[in-house]
Amino acid sequence: MSSTDGTPDQPAEAAERPGPPALAPETAPRTIPDRRTLLAEVWLVLWVSIAASALRSFVSLVDSLTKGTPLRQQTTTLITTYVIDRPWLDFMYQATRIGLALIPVLLVIHLLRRSGEGARTIGFDLRDWKRDLLRGAALAAGIGGVGLVFYLIAYNMGFSVRIAAVTLEGGWWNAAYPILYAAYNAIVEEVIVLAYLLHRADQLGWKPWKALGTSAFLRGAYHLYQGFGGFVGNIAMGLVFGVLYRRWRRVMPFVVAHFLIDAVAFVGYALLGGKVSWLP
View 1: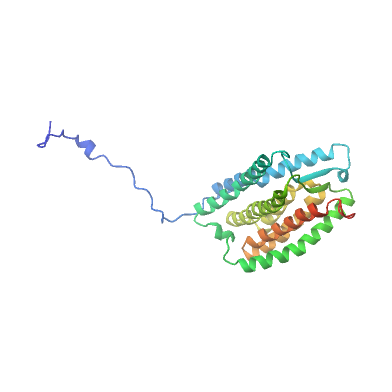
View 2: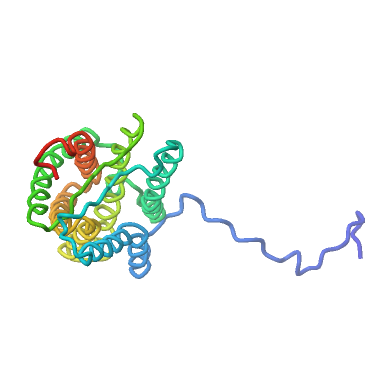
Protein backbone atom coordinates (compact mmCIF):
# COMPACT_ATOMS: atom_id res chain seq x y z
CA MET A 1 0.00 0.00 0.00
CA SER A 2 0.98 3.61 -0.55
CA SER A 3 0.21 6.83 1.22
CA THR A 4 -1.66 9.68 -0.45
CA ASP A 5 1.64 11.25 -1.61
CA GLY A 6 2.70 8.05 -3.37
CA THR A 7 5.37 6.90 -0.92
CA PRO A 8 5.18 3.34 0.39
CA ASP A 9 3.80 2.89 3.88
CA GLN A 10 6.41 1.89 6.54
CA PRO A 11 5.70 -1.14 8.71
CA ALA A 12 4.47 -0.18 12.17
CA GLU A 13 7.32 -2.01 13.92
CA ALA A 14 9.88 -0.12 11.83
CA ALA A 15 8.32 3.20 12.73
CA GLU A 16 8.48 2.35 16.41
CA ARG A 17 12.03 0.96 16.37
CA PRO A 18 14.25 3.02 18.72
CA GLY A 19 17.32 4.78 17.36
CA PRO A 20 20.87 4.44 18.67
CA PRO A 21 21.39 5.53 22.27
CA ALA A 22 22.58 9.07 22.75
CA LEU A 23 26.26 9.50 23.58
CA ALA A 24 27.12 10.69 27.06
CA PRO A 25 28.07 14.38 27.09
CA GLU A 26 31.68 15.35 27.57
CA THR A 27 30.73 16.88 30.90
CA ALA A 28 29.49 13.57 32.28
CA PRO A 29 31.17 12.80 35.62
CA ARG A 30 34.04 10.32 35.46
CA THR A 31 34.99 7.99 38.24
CA ILE A 32 38.13 6.13 39.24
CA PRO A 33 38.03 2.47 38.12
CA ASP A 34 37.31 -0.28 40.62
CA ARG A 35 40.21 -1.73 42.57
CA ARG A 36 40.74 -4.74 40.31
CA THR A 37 40.80 -2.62 37.16
CA LEU A 38 43.07 -0.05 38.80
CA LEU A 39 45.55 -2.70 39.90
CA ALA A 40 45.66 -4.17 36.39
CA GLU A 41 46.19 -0.67 34.98
CA VAL A 42 49.15 -0.02 37.29
CA TRP A 43 50.94 -3.25 36.47
CA LEU A 44 50.36 -2.87 32.74
CA VAL A 45 51.76 0.66 32.79
CA LEU A 46 54.80 -0.52 34.75
CA TRP A 47 55.42 -3.50 32.49
CA VAL A 48 55.50 -1.37 29.36
CA SER A 49 57.93 1.04 30.98
CA ILE A 50 60.01 0.88 34.18
CA ALA A 51 59.39 -2.75 35.14
CA ALA A 52 60.36 -3.94 31.66
CA SER A 53 63.58 -1.94 31.85
CA ALA A 54 64.22 -3.32 35.34
CA LEU A 55 63.93 -6.87 34.03
CA ARG A 56 66.38 -6.11 31.21
CA SER A 57 68.74 -4.54 33.75
CA PHE A 58 68.57 -7.66 35.92
CA VAL A 59 69.47 -9.84 32.94
CA SER A 60 72.32 -7.44 32.15
CA LEU A 61 73.63 -7.78 35.72
CA VAL A 62 73.50 -11.57 35.49
CA ASP A 63 75.50 -11.30 32.28
CA SER A 64 78.08 -9.07 33.98
CA LEU A 65 78.40 -11.37 37.01
CA THR A 66 78.89 -14.51 34.91
CA LYS A 67 81.52 -13.14 32.52
CA GLY A 68 84.36 -14.09 34.81
CA THR A 69 85.55 -10.47 34.87
CA PRO A 70 85.27 -8.23 37.95
CA LEU A 71 82.55 -5.59 37.72
CA ARG A 72 84.98 -2.70 37.96
CA GLN A 73 86.76 -3.97 34.85
CA GLN A 74 83.57 -3.84 32.81
CA THR A 75 82.12 -0.74 31.16
CA THR A 76 78.59 0.30 30.30
CA THR A 77 77.76 3.22 28.01
CA LEU A 78 74.61 5.29 28.42
CA ILE A 79 74.69 7.53 25.34
CA THR A 80 76.57 6.54 22.23
CA THR A 81 76.62 7.13 18.48
CA TYR A 82 74.71 4.55 16.44
CA VAL A 83 75.83 5.57 12.94
CA ILE A 84 79.04 7.60 12.63
CA ASP A 85 79.12 8.27 8.88
CA ARG A 86 75.44 9.28 8.47
CA PRO A 87 74.45 11.88 11.09
CA TRP A 88 70.89 12.09 9.79
CA LEU A 89 70.42 8.35 10.37
CA ASP A 90 72.03 8.55 13.80
CA PHE A 91 69.57 11.32 14.65
CA MET A 92 66.70 9.06 13.59
CA TYR A 93 67.97 6.34 15.91
CA GLN A 94 68.35 8.74 18.83
CA ALA A 95 64.95 10.37 18.26
CA THR A 96 63.24 7.00 17.94
CA ARG A 97 64.76 5.76 21.19
CA ILE A 98 63.67 8.86 23.09
CA GLY A 99 60.26 9.16 21.45
CA LEU A 100 59.22 5.57 22.05
CA ALA A 101 60.34 5.74 25.68
CA LEU A 102 58.02 8.70 26.26
CA ILE A 103 54.89 6.87 25.06
CA PRO A 104 54.18 5.32 28.51
CA VAL A 105 54.19 8.84 29.98
CA LEU A 106 51.50 9.87 27.51
CA LEU A 107 49.60 6.73 28.48
CA VAL A 108 49.76 7.71 32.15
CA ILE A 109 48.44 11.20 31.38
CA HIS A 110 45.64 9.67 29.28
CA LEU A 111 44.64 7.29 32.06
CA LEU A 112 44.60 10.08 34.63
CA ARG A 113 42.44 12.22 32.36
CA ARG A 114 40.09 9.32 31.69
CA SER A 115 39.49 8.88 35.40
CA GLY A 116 38.66 12.58 35.70
CA GLU A 117 41.95 13.64 37.31
CA GLY A 118 44.52 14.81 34.79
CA ALA A 119 48.22 15.62 34.96
CA ARG A 120 47.63 18.33 37.55
CA THR A 121 46.67 15.64 40.04
CA ILE A 122 50.32 14.59 40.26
CA GLY A 123 51.69 18.11 39.83
CA PHE A 124 52.94 17.62 36.27
CA ASP A 125 52.34 21.21 35.19
CA LEU A 126 53.83 24.70 35.45
CA ARG A 127 51.47 26.24 38.02
CA ASP A 128 54.23 26.63 40.61
CA TRP A 129 57.28 26.63 38.36
CA LYS A 130 59.41 29.02 40.43
CA ARG A 131 59.15 26.92 43.58
CA ASP A 132 59.58 23.74 41.51
CA LEU A 133 62.84 25.06 40.08
CA LEU A 134 64.19 26.07 43.49
CA ARG A 135 63.28 22.76 45.09
CA GLY A 136 64.62 20.81 42.13
CA ALA A 137 67.93 22.68 42.11
CA ALA A 138 68.37 22.13 45.85
CA LEU A 139 67.64 18.42 45.51
CA ALA A 140 70.04 18.11 42.57
CA ALA A 141 72.85 19.81 44.47
CA GLY A 142 72.45 17.58 47.50
CA ILE A 143 71.65 14.21 45.95
CA GLY A 144 73.86 14.70 42.90
CA GLY A 145 76.97 15.29 44.98
CA VAL A 146 76.27 12.41 47.34
CA GLY A 147 75.47 10.16 44.38
CA LEU A 148 78.80 10.88 42.70
CA VAL A 149 80.73 10.10 45.89
CA PHE A 150 78.73 6.91 46.39
CA TYR A 151 79.41 5.80 42.81
CA LEU A 152 83.17 6.35 43.17
CA ILE A 153 83.23 4.39 46.45
CA ALA A 154 81.15 1.53 45.01
CA TYR A 155 83.30 1.39 41.88
CA ASN A 156 86.58 1.31 43.79
CA MET A 157 85.18 -1.42 46.05
CA GLY A 158 84.27 -3.51 43.01
CA PHE A 159 80.47 -3.25 43.36
CA SER A 160 79.84 -1.22 40.19
CA VAL A 161 80.83 -1.27 36.57
CA ARG A 162 82.63 1.66 35.01
CA ILE A 163 80.01 4.03 33.60
CA ALA A 164 81.16 5.68 30.39
CA ALA A 165 78.18 8.01 30.38
CA VAL A 166 78.71 9.58 26.96
CA THR A 167 80.74 8.25 24.02
CA LEU A 168 79.46 10.30 21.10
CA GLU A 169 81.31 10.77 17.83
CA GLY A 170 80.50 13.30 15.17
CA GLY A 171 79.81 17.00 14.88
CA TRP A 172 78.58 19.80 17.11
CA TRP A 173 74.99 18.55 17.07
CA ASN A 174 75.97 15.74 19.44
CA ALA A 175 76.07 18.32 22.22
CA ALA A 176 72.26 18.29 22.26
CA TYR A 177 71.91 14.55 22.89
CA PRO A 178 73.02 14.53 26.55
CA ILE A 179 70.45 17.25 27.34
CA LEU A 180 67.67 15.42 25.50
CA TYR A 181 68.48 12.13 27.23
CA ALA A 182 68.60 13.83 30.62
CA ALA A 183 65.14 15.28 29.99
CA TYR A 184 63.63 12.00 28.86
CA ASN A 185 65.14 10.07 31.77
CA ALA A 186 63.77 12.61 34.23
CA ILE A 187 60.25 12.66 32.79
CA VAL A 188 59.87 8.89 32.39
CA GLU A 189 61.22 7.88 35.79
CA GLU A 190 59.65 10.60 37.92
CA VAL A 191 56.22 10.69 36.28
CA ILE A 192 55.80 6.91 36.23
CA VAL A 193 57.78 5.33 39.06
CA LEU A 194 57.35 8.20 41.52
CA ALA A 195 54.19 10.25 40.99
CA TYR A 196 51.86 7.91 39.11
CA LEU A 197 52.75 4.82 41.13
CA LEU A 198 52.43 6.56 44.52
CA HIS A 199 49.20 8.26 43.46
CA ARG A 200 47.59 5.02 42.35
CA ALA A 201 48.98 3.19 45.39
CA ASP A 202 47.09 5.61 47.63
CA GLN A 203 43.89 4.94 45.68
CA LEU A 204 44.49 1.20 46.02
CA GLY A 205 44.82 1.56 49.77
CA TRP A 206 48.46 0.48 50.01
CA LYS A 207 50.23 1.29 53.24
CA PRO A 208 52.78 4.11 52.88
CA TRP A 209 55.79 1.84 53.52
CA LYS A 210 54.62 -0.60 50.83
CA ALA A 211 54.11 2.15 48.25
CA LEU A 212 57.44 3.86 49.00
CA GLY A 213 59.29 0.54 49.06
CA THR A 214 57.83 -0.58 45.72
CA SER A 215 58.64 2.73 44.06
CA ALA A 216 62.19 2.83 45.41
CA PHE A 217 62.85 -0.83 44.58
CA LEU A 218 61.73 -0.35 40.98
CA ARG A 219 63.97 2.69 40.67
CA GLY A 220 66.91 0.68 41.96
CA ALA A 221 66.13 -2.36 39.79
CA TYR A 222 65.96 -0.09 36.74
CA HIS A 223 69.67 0.70 37.35
CA LEU A 224 70.92 -2.84 38.02
CA TYR A 225 72.91 -2.74 34.78
CA GLN A 226 75.29 -0.41 36.64
CA GLY A 227 75.99 -3.02 39.30
CA PHE A 228 75.08 -3.18 42.98
CA GLY A 229 76.19 0.40 43.60
CA GLY A 230 73.61 1.79 41.18
CA PHE A 231 70.94 -0.46 42.67
CA VAL A 232 71.50 0.61 46.29
CA GLY A 233 72.14 4.27 45.47
CA ASN A 234 68.95 4.62 43.47
CA ILE A 235 66.87 2.90 46.15
CA ALA A 236 68.10 5.52 48.61
CA MET A 237 67.30 8.28 46.13
CA GLY A 238 63.86 6.79 45.55
CA LEU A 239 63.06 6.77 49.26
CA VAL A 240 64.05 10.41 49.65
CA PHE A 241 62.06 11.41 46.57
CA GLY A 242 59.07 9.37 47.72
CA VAL A 243 58.92 10.96 51.17
CA LEU A 244 59.19 14.47 49.72
CA TYR A 245 56.65 13.77 46.99
CA ARG A 246 54.10 12.73 49.61
CA ARG A 247 54.69 16.07 51.32
CA TRP A 248 54.68 18.33 48.24
CA ARG A 249 52.32 16.36 45.98
CA ARG A 250 54.07 17.75 42.91
CA VAL A 251 56.29 15.78 40.56
CA MET A 252 57.89 18.76 38.81
CA PRO A 253 60.58 19.42 41.47
CA PHE A 254 61.78 15.84 41.00
CA VAL A 255 61.73 16.10 37.22
CA VAL A 256 63.88 19.22 37.53
CA ALA A 257 66.25 17.57 40.02
CA HIS A 258 66.62 14.40 37.97
CA PHE A 259 67.21 16.42 34.80
CA LEU A 260 69.92 18.52 36.42
CA ILE A 261 71.64 15.48 37.94
CA ASP A 262 71.74 13.62 34.63
CA ALA A 263 72.61 16.68 32.54
CA VAL A 264 75.57 17.54 34.75
CA ALA A 265 76.70 13.90 34.80
CA PHE A 266 76.44 13.50 31.02
CA VAL A 267 78.01 16.82 30.09
CA GLY A 268 80.61 16.51 32.86
CA TYR A 269 81.71 13.10 31.66
CA ALA A 270 81.86 14.28 28.05
CA LEU A 271 84.18 17.10 29.14
CA LEU A 272 86.24 15.33 31.82
CA GLY A 273 86.19 11.64 30.87
CA GLY A 274 89.76 10.42 30.44
CA LYS A 275 91.17 13.80 31.48
CA VAL A 276 91.03 13.61 35.28
CA SER A 277 92.49 10.83 37.39
CA TRP A 278 89.66 10.49 39.91
CA LEU A 279 86.95 9.80 37.28
CA PRO A 280 86.98 6.17 36.07
